[in-house]
Length: 292
Ligand SMILES: [Fe+2]
Image 1: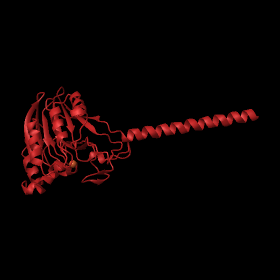
Image 2 (image 1 turned 90 degrees about the horizontal axis):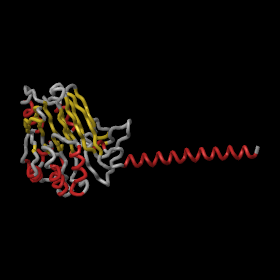
Image 3 (image 1 turned 45 degrees about the horizontal axis):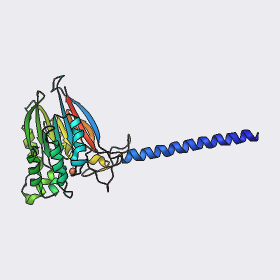
Image 4 (image 1 turned 180 degrees about the vertical axis):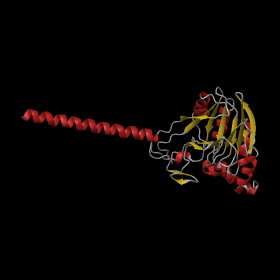
């Protein structure tokens, strides 16, 4: 009887130990996953009747680098982008920062320049730097096409594309009011001219929260950043806790959103700030495959 009792106690203790160790392992792996801040690749497939069945265009979308350096001379992020074999690289603003040194951006552009054509728009931090013109100049030196409430018509893999982009709306408050115009009106007027153009139309604009304006424009795809994935995420429960200009529980923290015919892709960005950790929200290189 005594032996039986001892055996039962030993079995119960072993069970408890296994459960405790499993829980500890689970908590440790959750913490590691939560704070993982290595670059990940996020893929989206966009289907459109404007492309033939066998046609395809691949875009790599990068937002919110904030001058951070990934690997020696940006080799880590550049190699990852190169491996995606993009036809186009879209840089959706806040690539440079208003505080961090510009060196990271220069290395980034140098590393990207031979991979694919680069299209760039400014974000609020580039405007806040007070050096937005110098920053744009730097992008142009490395062959990037700077879109400033403008668009270009290009052929990619036999597909006619319109690639447009806008400056960050904060530009009207800076540079001694040099860019003093009604931003919303100017964007609406410029892109409304595309209403009768049948090509597939892409708009790059840093701010996701301005979706109500984008919905009024005759474009097929909008690419944004700015929200940093809402900084904190809880898988399956919360897609972002807080984002600039959207506040708590942002609607457009990151992901792919459909508004009837319009597709809006919001990058969670590649920002890295040790003082402001990203939780369940690793920096992401976004790959968009547009196909017929
Ligand atoms: Fe931003």
